[in-house]
Length: 626
Image 1 (tube, rainbow, N blue to C red):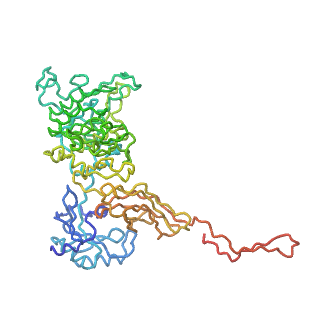
Image 2 (cartoon, rainbow, N blue to C red):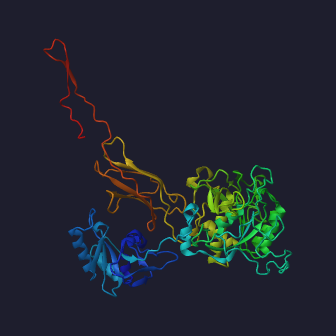
């Protein structure tokens, strides 16, 4: 049997995703399935379905590609397709259950207990184009949170693929050192840290840490046990905006770890993590280094796993002892890269804190995972710092522009009557990375900070191609949650896809243009080809009409008929996994160019009319068909 395995399909098993979704069974009885150890390819390689799910297929069924030219549209397959499919199925003792894809794909049912590998070898030997198992197909996991669609950042950082692998654990604690957290927000219920050594409201320092009743964190700015923001409607710092910091910490906490799949609101990067709220900012205005350091110390002493620092100031060495202590205690320290829009270099005069407090051995240690900010198109945001230093203070990047998530909610206070809102800055890039660190730790509880950082950094998408002015200045690139957790990811789809009638060519072609995939020469670098898919008319199956090399950003379809309507898609592929554009609008090639000029015009005096007229003659001219 091993020798036959090299004979099978030249297309990897997962390429059947779209086809398998089309298969329906007339019988309500569940089909017997079998778990395959692998499915060998013609080149001897092996394809597995994913890092999470086993390679499961219908036990007595194969999908067979028919070696037929052209397509067979319509509900009924042609007699040619029927005859060929019966012949191939018979080679393995099977029968044709149905024909799909316009008569190009046969569903072949095999006798019970028939070995799939041997049957596939027999059918392939009889002349099939390809033979593959009817694999189980697993959807990317999407939460049911009502406002998930407003969170554009999740698809960009590939959160759904990560959720196929893991959704986190409440045993992982993220300390949010910020402006306080709305601990009563419905997106946090049951996920706010509770101090196991403290008895609430008994007026006693039960755990002996010097703080009374710190049962759910602490407000270090106001020195009390309520880490909730306290808006008062007053412009306390006289900058023209009252209470501008109130929702900052709540949004940071929500982006990091809002409860996912709870039918309400939004989803964090992990759906399950615990938030330790530590307030260091007032309702508006600034705080001080000593207060932040005190909060870091508290997070270390109380056993946080991750510390999120969405803060920034001029470089202060005073941050370093606390950060060093946290890192050496096994705590991941994630910091915003800063919103100065400046270059971080080897010169200390360019540094900011805490992102540049990277350990005692400058240019060697990496105690802080620094995060730069991107816009919605993965271009470095105008406000974000970037890094050309040899220290790599900014390790990775993540979206930070107009991120949507939980706000502080109190309808009795003007301006706080909405559970959700948006904000912009590297403050909101950082918690996405803190959330990813929480997913990594949930899967690998024994990982050190260095191991967590390595997993996140080494699985980033290279976005240099989208940022030609900042090549090498964006750390390792944009975080990719799915790849970090080991989930195979298809190359990113192309963007800016358009299909239109080619001008001035007498309806002879349709032109397609696009911007290449982020994984074409960048990102994962995994793209191997573009496939052009076309459908004639508003119904029927798409057919592949061309395969193009990486780097291509246009195609002219010259196999068209003037006046017909065509629809197109562009598929990005790595040879195994695919992503596609939406279907283009219908395009009708038409003769839109000017007719040829008359080149044999004669002008003669008409006789006899006493000079009353001139006759023009172009009788040998051949006009265009339209």
